[in-house]
Length: 128
Image (cartoon, rainbow, N blue to C red; front, side, top):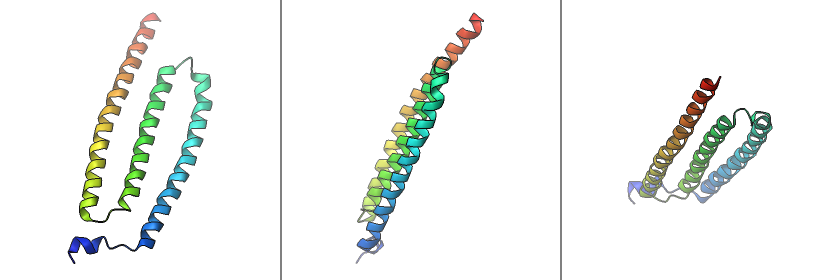
């Protein structure tokens, strides 16, 4: 038996326990996520007319963070099913590549939003 095969000789009970732990943690995260969204919505209402761009920026940043966390949970779930070192390397490589692309997309989007906010602030300052 090759060394890499022994490394992944994990009892099915352990894999099941890991999968259940990931699902329970994700469920707890989703509950917390819902509470944070409710709180943010309560504060967003009164400030909507004054700082709409900032609210949009914060929502986009929060959404990007949420996507990253969910991608990490998905990776963890996939890793519990890995049967070889090659599977782990493939999953991790795919995850890193997707996260790098997502990071690039998110920073571009947030950068553009920040630029628009700065332009809007400059216009408001000039008007005053």
